[in-house]
Image 1 (cartoon, rainbow, N blue to C red):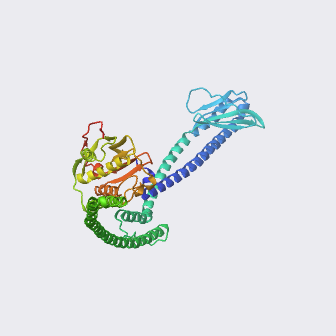
Image 2 (image 1 turned 180 degrees about the horizontal axis):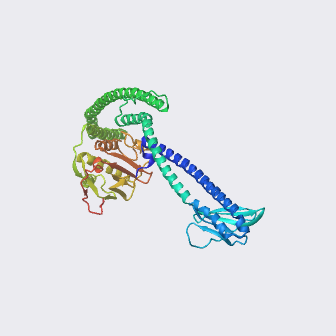
Image 3 (image 1 turned 60 degrees about the vertical axis):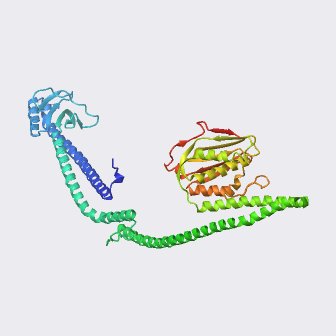
Length: 506
């Protein structure tokens, strides 16, 4: 149901003016009617009092000489007043002496008591006007006149007045409505035009339009002028903003192209340097091995130690070069998406890690993982790096427990790899995925510091994100999400190790 506050300003003005006019006229007519009613009642009482006074004066001698017939003749003069119902003359004892009734028959009405100290009293009761008046002769009370009158004249007058009020109200409201309509057009047209202009600006963002101006200098004219001035300022700012936006877009496009070119050059440089370092590194490693094999008997123990350290350094350098080449290749490689069961990838990685984890007490707990659209090779590398890290950093635990599964985080499906290893301080979590960033000493845990950077790059290429949560000496959990797990393209939950997960001890 439409509320008054939702009406248009035109309807509100019409309703307000009609209500004000109607209420004002009704109050005026009511006040005038109340005044007329009081005046008419007073006139009725006055007329009836005069009639009672005349009857009393003419009946005094009849009462003194006990001439009831003469009193009846005096009362018969009341026939000239059609409103009089009855009239009577009563003795001092309150007995009926003479009576007149408009309708023949019936009994004489009992005489109402006269208030002490008064010579006349009247009542409006039982739809009648009743009046009693004392008959006094030479200062002595000799009887009482009692006259009853109906209120038909007053009722007829009230009906006529009510009809007149209705007619006046109707004519007045119609006239007010016509006058209001005439003046309303002049008053509301500018406001309606202003509202329509505001709607166009809001809907179409067209700041070049203007509200039609008026010749008036009232509040509406000032409002329209201020609104148009505001549109001028908005239009100027919008044009400046549009120009700045175009310039910014050009600069962003240019800088993006420059960054892409620089990234490609950097990737190419990284790949080239890493590739070119392989040959001299192989020479160092080869000649060190040859020196150790051919001249071991001639070398001092300290020299053998130096050669051993050279060999370990070249092996570490080789692993670092391989990781850098892998990272560079991933940067240039676009994922080839296909439906892949993540459980099968995890099983392949576990088989690959069997040699590295042989002899260790590790509980692998693999939950149900889905089929997703991904690059199988790249995603296998993600699981390999995460699971090998979990195995490496849980080395001090017996048994080591490593969980792989999926869960919902803030309404998003994510995969996780959890271990009960040494963990890390979350204060340094922002360094986890940086190249060459390590949170543990090389003496405690081997590594190049490139693996997690590679994992992050692969996840980002799949439109996902990766993060970690950990506590020192309480293990770590790595979470990652893929776009295909949350955009409706996930196919089905695939699990190759049984409903209750895969538990393997190595």
